[in-house]
Image 1 (cartoon, rainbow, N blue to C red):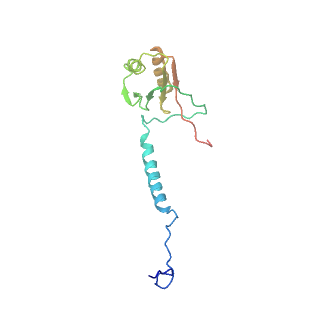
Image 2: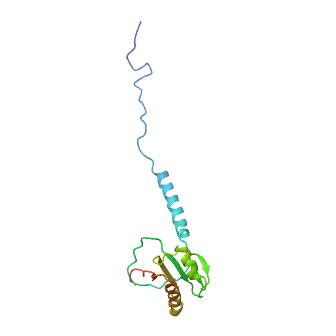
Length: 146
């Protein structure tokens, strides 16, 4: 009965392979770059609304507690309530329906910068004559350095 305590008879000691503890970051970077590209392509599509060229101003943005109703006036004079076209005769009725007859609901008027100022004031006057008290004009912040 013999017991061998040596190297196992194969000519020396055997080395055990250790598990590799390094993280391969190349696939992680690839996945993150693909996700970044997808996000950059889809984020401009998430903005909704009517395309209006807003005038620029240095005024501070208004703090909003509730979601305001937006009335847009395009350069051709057409009116939109949110994304839906509306006639001037139906504007106040549809605003009251959208605001649940709340005269204090905030209403933003977006007027194209190339439209006649009188048309914008006419729409604002029509809204205030309909009983709404919180009507404001929207403008775009100028880019830095302008």
